[in-house]
Image (cartoon, rainbow, N blue to C red; front, side, top):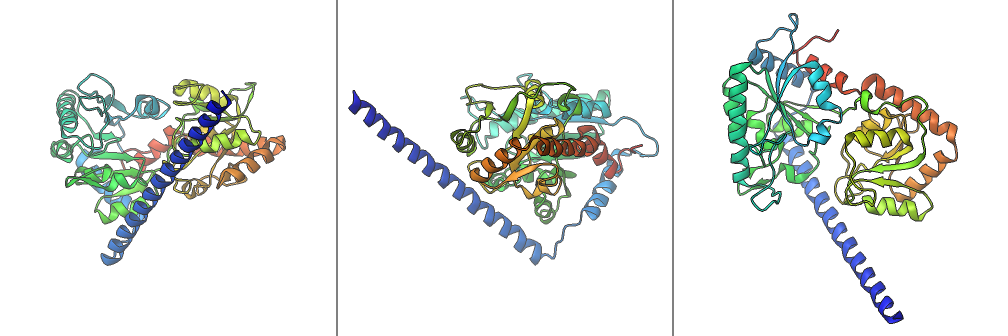
Length: 411
């Protein structure tokens, strides 16, 4: 029997080694692709003498949108928005509620009658690109846009869209009837979103031929879109104080909380914390506690003293992207401890409004420091909440964006 357990340990060690090697290889591939992507757009920008200026970009977008919509900010009315969603639980965590408070919103439903774009092939898989899936989404989208435009009119088609799942030709037909397109792109540091499949351009960039404005959560991508000839502005995410803001006298009985599916380097970081004596309550697909929806997530956030953020992309430990929890966590009044993402530290002051780490060891040190200094923890968490509540609500973010492009006037 002892020999059996010895052999089992050897097998597990080998499996762990293979898993770690595979993760390292995937991270190395992504970083190599990202370096090539950055170099490609840098060289093009230099060769074509293209520089990015947000003010000039906004002026261009403002002129284009106002001309197409024929709306005057001095004579305000509710905008009529046709929204093309990606994930209902994500969108209903505050964004859609805010959009619906500000605008008259019609939602896109795929050919199955379900919310948002359809992604699966006939075998239930989610392929990178399948023309049959694109055709299904195109047909449903064009039919619903035509019907809505005939009945109530549409001022803007807005969505989180990739050419992997809807075609630039479909959006071009929508623009041809006078409806401009604003696209939200949340993963522009993923090189595959700037790639091609059989000569077909993927990602949000694959739709720029029929896009009036891109709202990107990646600051450096604004220049990349400028090189492609499409207006884009840096668009941080936000949160909903109605869902996430703390309730008075709620007991914070979770020292360290992580919410998110288990993949990439997340297991490694959480396991490292636990192995170094820090108890982490982990929720999401792949963790023993399991999946939680947006409402349940908000409830957990309000109970946490520290919310752990893992701000990296895929298997990388030094390629970052903004995520919803970057804004939901401060809004919940917890101390947010996350990767030192330059896009985030430009918005929240490290050591004053949030806390940051670069690797697992620093993460342990930071969490121990704050748990052993509860007054400091509360002070930084409070400052983060004050910044979030004053600046980073979805209502404010959406309204300010529409004001910047001249579609509404904010009182």
